[in-house]
Amino acid sequence: QVALEESGGGLVQAGGSLRLSCTAPGRTFRSNIVGWFRRAPGKGREFVASVGRNGISTDYADSVKGRFTISIDNDRITAYLQMNSLKVEHTEVYYCAASKLWDCTQEVDEFGFWGQGTQVTVSS
Image (tube, rainbow, N blue to C red; front, side, top):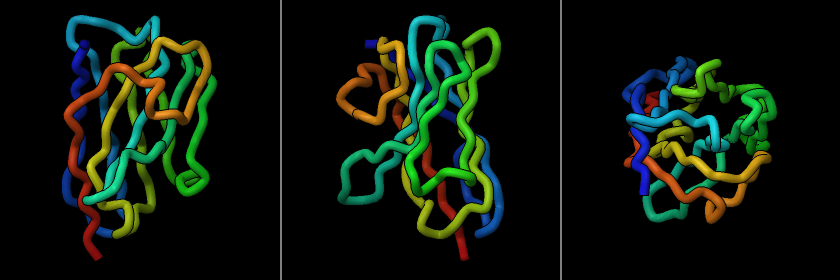
């Protein structure tokens, strides 16, 4: 199973921004859609956003629309999650995931490749 690597998490004040990055060491995302999920303590993984194989199609959870933006570079090497106007309730572990599907999906079980997660902490 390919392990993905996330980076960019950290501590930020409410109202601030963070950009998370995701790579698949030694590989590209040319054959994958890429998604971001998050998990609060004691809860399951929750869909945040995904980007399709064409690098253009995107899908977002209603709770982050207009606040978060998912993207992927032209070489399909690095995927990003730009998070703006962060709130305390966005404090969670964020996971990058990849799927061999063609179109965006919100289903966690459709993603077979995962990273270890990166902690995002938003202080008041």
